[in-house]
Length: 253
Length: 181
Length: 181
Image (cartoon, rainbow over all chains, first blue to last red; front, side):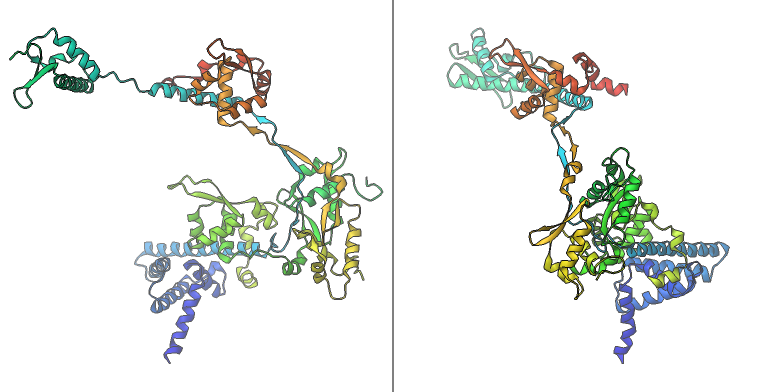
């Protein structure tokens, strides 16, 4: 009993699966009305569609979204056609019905076009070209294609690249090195017998922050190096206070 | 005009040239084969008559001429020659939309069919060399525009796209047509 | 045996089959195409006679049959298509630098291009007859000096080197160029 009841629903599902989307089904339903596509009953079409979607959903809940979107739109269309609240709604319904009919006609035309193509003998399936073509064409690639535009383009590219290279070549580093600081410290200490601030031995020139820091670091390293070798003495009164320096020979203490 | 063997000057050469090629041979190429005083039209007409009713026929295809097997032999040949499968309905409809509405975007194709374009359908048409893209539509997202290829004309035996029946011709008495197909 | 159109039974099918096949068609395959009472030898003889003296011939090839264009037409069918090569980018740049800076040493070319100059690049230009050497630079190692040839002028349709667009016109300061456009 229940098996026979399920049967019509299943056939519906099967037929739904055979369609390439809602429009395809609608066109099929419209054709079944046995009238010209210009005179289809949109209302009957809507009812049939909605009935098919409903029975399909009863068996299978997950129905692709476009089927449901079309169902919702058709339900709206039906309400406009059957129970328009005013003239505006009635006109909306008529326009929408005509849009639907036009879309169905367009699809029908395409189907007919596809069928027309399909009815033609197709090369490679129904008709066959020469299976073993003979090629008498020889390709001569001995010549070179040259034109002024590509010569100039190449020249510009080369010059631009060379120019870019020159422009972006990094300048040599001119920071105050430890070697420079050692030389300056030893040569100046001879003339400064008293304790004096290490900072006094930094060359005055650098203004850039990075260059100044480099000079500071190099001079401190040179001072430490000379203190280690016993050439000079270093003293610092407080943390982060000024570092004092004097030659080891004339200990100022 | 014809020599004692019954050939027009250059006829054998034109025959050999078309026969050698798998693709249609453009008329201007054939014209270069003829002696200066020969008329290509007359040569082609004579050649076509010679192949009339034979197993191989001379036909116009796209921009030129080609030999191909006679249509009535299709069924017998298919038994011995391996042929690719016919395109499924979705692919044929998509092809028809592109043929009629080109250049056309994917979204427009889907709008007309009321169904999304599946990857297998697109692949089948591309692999068969029937469709291609040309440029973009100046619209948000700049979607590709699809067109049919010269291979489409060749495979379906069309001289050019104007040979496709007009929409009005297709929609005459759709009931009968639908029933007949 | 022949019907009113003069064809033996199966003759058209045999013709189409041989035409459409990629390989010579073995006789036993052709035999399967014929109606039971037809004789293959007679069909082949009739078909061969039909193509006698034409632009296309039916010939035996190994174990089977094939069509091929008549050998006497080969020379007339041969078409030479010139597809000139393009010079590779590096060669084009080198040629341009030699044209504008000649006479110039290899080291100078490399300095200007900011890239080393490979021997194949130089060989390609030499082979094409576009450049040659003239004398040496009086510098350590006495390097060759490179110049363009008369062939270079000919290729570019120049009467002499002064017809090359001026460097000043080409190398506009990018900032000025942006302002001027």
